Length: 396
Image (cartoon, rainbow, N blue to C red):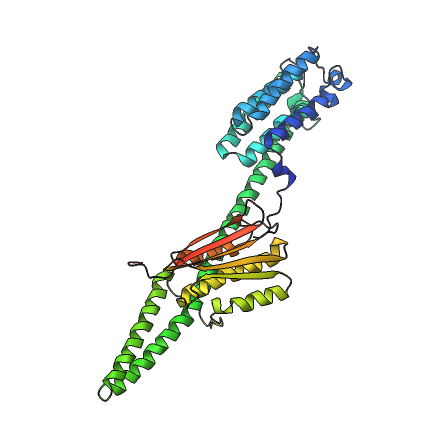
């Protein structure tokens, strides 16, 4: 239910569009305009006219369309279009850096988004083209090795190198962000398991305390009042079964940090009305509908159901941008309890990086062999559903 911000413009626009736009900019730049002064300055040969430019543009657009599916072929077509448009195949004709703008953009995007092997192949191809071109044009190598001047072709090679380095930096930033997100999600799941362990500690400690008291009472009256001893033993049996059910359903070893005391007060569906009243007082009306038998639940199930409702209602208040929500508690199906929390707000959630409350709920429900689902509704708003069995699964 946490709101997912819109991606930046760079990610919303497809790479093919960026490369095509870069070619259009290059074609309109004075350095590649037909008959422009810049072309005369670079010694360009005669050009074939508008039809020739349209043909090279078509080749460039095909290359742009292949930038994600066939990146190396895309680079080849863009290089062919750029060198043809500027007569770069002719000796003593320098290709201006602006003419290779689409090539540089494609190289940057390929390096940032495609596999490393494709990135290296594309970069090698561009540099081989430019080095061979520099070798054809007299004086270009002087700009690289002596620093007396930087020729146009020399500048094109430097810009290609910069484009590759920028793409590599973008790739590393994205991989780092993905690693941080994965680590944060794992830490959120671990934190949720630790919280469950602390809550289960309270439940188990309570049950063991009952067992100890009843065992002591049975020992004292076993000779004088055997009927009372049988009642105590029955209480011990019930408490033991409930405790084993909780341990089996959690499927996780109970752990406690050194020196950390549990300060969590067990809660359950008995507190649902109080939660609804407090949320309504905060400005979001919570309507609670109960269906079926609303008798007592196993402690771990009761607590988990309440946590699902509590987290979902909290997300409605924070992110849904609505004035009300509906909570359904369904006990009509024997042996299970299901809950559904819905709203008609504009919030969205459940995506990686959009918060870890739902991940914690999913983990909690899974430990009880339940089913959990959360996502936008087709008619608008958001829905969270959970179904938890009440009986202990054999062999769990």
